[in-house]
Image (tube, rainbow over all chains, first blue to last red; front, side):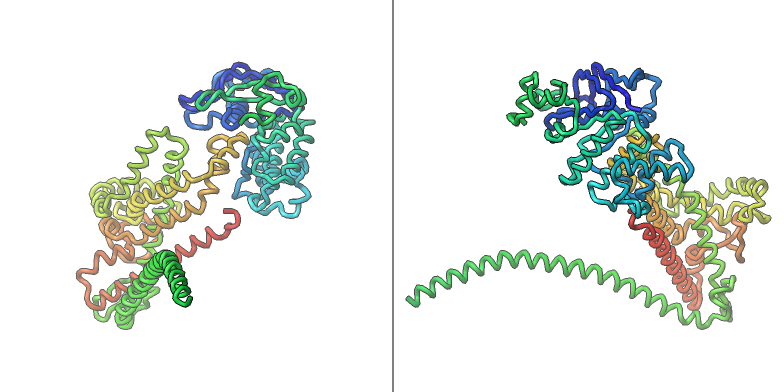
Length: 258
Length: 327
């Protein structure tokens, strides 16, 4: 299920603005890769280039190559919709569909993929909610609105929705930044469980979180306002946090910067 | 000693007074605003009540003089002696022409709104939106003229075609179909209510949170699937409100309908037939030469129109409220 991502020479733009410059990296399957860096350094933008969500914004475009195993995601014959079906995404703010029930939220992606039949849907919804550690809390109220859950539950609902379609890769854009510490812990535990099956990439502002959940960490930085973001260093998480190669990384993680 | 205290207390009093004045300025503003708002609300209710009382007052003598059943009778002869008139045909014509207009206009209006918000290139979108809004500014008499001089002649053929091939649908059945029919009036009404439905839907669609749109896209939804998952459910109550505003305009539309229809008596489900009438159209056509009783009768019909609008609006609210917890 999990696949490797290889990025080479990737640039992203918003209209005339050069947002990220020349990024190359390998993201290993069945592991958690964390992106850290100051605000505006392009880590979220980079994350969104990985499932072609970047180009959803008006005027946004991408140059370079993103390989999912052997397939170039930016190949001319590749449909972005198909890419997004195999690379799931969890956003910064929980965004369950407000007009759908808990059940329908989880089933939304399946229905897009043409899965019909109540038996099959019931099974996947239960499995996904269990996978997101939410089943016990919501099993008696699956027909209630998803937006009625607490923030942390909503975020786990969004994770359930993303894993219901069994993606190859799961991208998480600061998934805990709107959550309290208990909910954060629940999501982190979940990430640790999910990495046995998925390739997980997580953007975070919380360095402890990166240290806790990730196997590898990439540090992004910008030279100044208006300059494009760059990948400074990527290595084993333990190395990044104890003995980084670059001075900028050390300054950032020790808090002397940003 | 005493004088000292007196000075002190007077100073204290002055500063307290100043503070109070400053605060009370704020309170006065609050009060003026609150009373102003209350006054506006009360004024609206008072005007509504005054209109209702006036209409009922004027309608009662005519209704008392009426020799026929006001609710069920299909003839409208309030100027005859004795006066006989009933609202049935007019109410039927009003409702069916407005609903036909709504059925024709809503899908097109929502399609335009979706195209402008989610499909069209930016420059085209703003131009198109402007043109649609312009349609709303055309006076209804112009629609009436256009309907009478252009559409009626063209609709003759359309009516014959529909009658020939879809005559098995009761709505399009019957004989002696023609252009000055309820159906033509509905088409004119549909064009008239299109801009209001479209521009309100557009506003609502533009407010769909980016988070919902991206949630759908990130799941691998195509643009249309995204619209179905995120945009339409979010815009549902807005679309219903927009349709109801459009329906309200269609129900009350007077001059365009009066010009297009060739008045003929009798309720008929065959909307392609020449004839038919609506409450508002009837008022426009007959008010000038109406007798005292005739005017009372027309005012009574106006009350019925008011009632229909009220029922429609309440129905719409009930639909919107039914799934409120999800919105």
